[in-house]
Amino acid sequence: MNLTKKFIQHPNEVDMTYFQHLKFALNLAFKLFITSCCSIIHAIFPFLFTKYSSSSIRDLNNLFNQRYHEDDK
Image 1 (tube, helix red, strand yellow):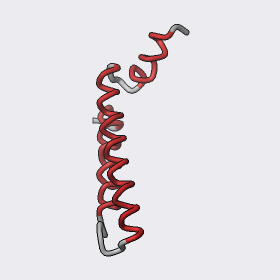
Image 2 (cartoon, helix red, strand yellow):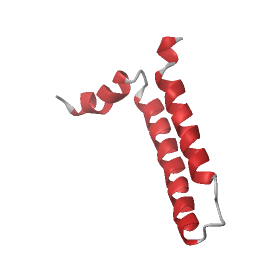
Image 3 (cartoon, helix red, strand yellow):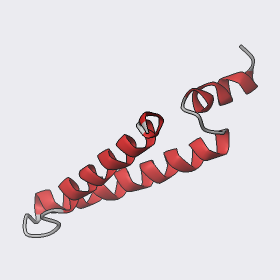
Image 4 (cartoon, helix red, strand yellow):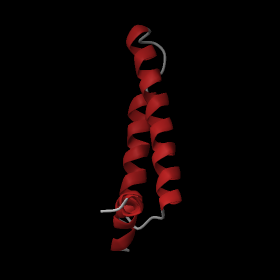
């Protein structure tokens, strides 16, 4: 398999272009990073970010459900 096919195979499998997938994945990584940072802070200071992580995970779950169930509509 040549290098170009390796870059576009997975994005094509999820009905995205390479750049759409790049944007989606980087956005997801940023959200997960922020959620992780808030979770660490919450672990040390339990009175901070008391609902942020669970709310963020719910939002990400909704994002994936919308993305991967668009075909069902």
